[in-house]
Image (cartoon, rainbow, N blue to C red):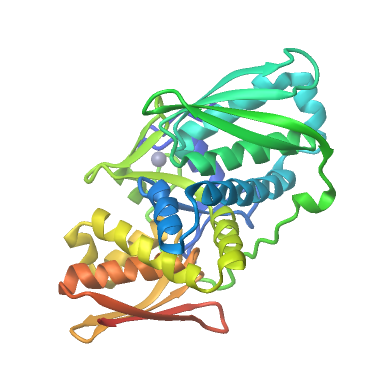
Length: 357
Ligand SMILES: [Zn+2]
């Protein structure tokens, strides 16, 4: 089956309908690896997020860049190690990198990563020392580089280094160069916790492919690897929550508790710029569906009045994102600046409260 074939009824790529599941508990997971959780989220602002974090936290952009690439590659190694068939290294030798990478190319198109093309490998035969790819309109350049580094490291079982070069405003050349040092088994482990709580979210399934019909509000351009919400033109992509969490945890490990507030602030700004007023005002049912279609988690309560906004969510993917969104929702609806308080409950739920600042 071609990953990029689309459903005749709803138009989404079969590579999405067959491989991903929208669960009743507000999560999106991989069919073959239910522990692998993804969000389908607005990506235009991802690279802006890294830029804002470097400003708010007072560290250089280059430092954030390295941290994002390293953390993301760690998550990608762990994920691929779990899901790729055994003997994949052998497969890479026999089938060659081109075959492997053509899979990555079509995967990139359906996941909304942009258009990936293989440049070549050096030396041309045998064990590669360097592999070049080109990416056009990446959903996030550092996240893409982390993915590519992680994938190369799983195939070669050696540490790899990434360099990149902008070719024009949309295209980048990315080279991965292998070092001599072997990767130990511990480099392939990353604990991913499955969502703990069941849920009652119901999607109407497409009669053609079984994916939620709500996905019809998005359009896939399978030539460019760009997915957009039709009405607003906002771009979205599917990305692993473990990769994002790994980045944020690494930042917090290094810079402490203020990282959470920085992520919330950056996401608040992103959401204020991107959300339509009527989306913010769509209430419990509307926001619950928006969150579940994106795999962010299951909204279980929401109250909003002049005094503020109070909400609870089961299985939150990235709690700081949700708090930033809640701030933006409150501010768009009330016209007042908000102040947030949040906590993770013992049962894993996120409880957040926004009050006028
Ligand atoms: Zn369909």
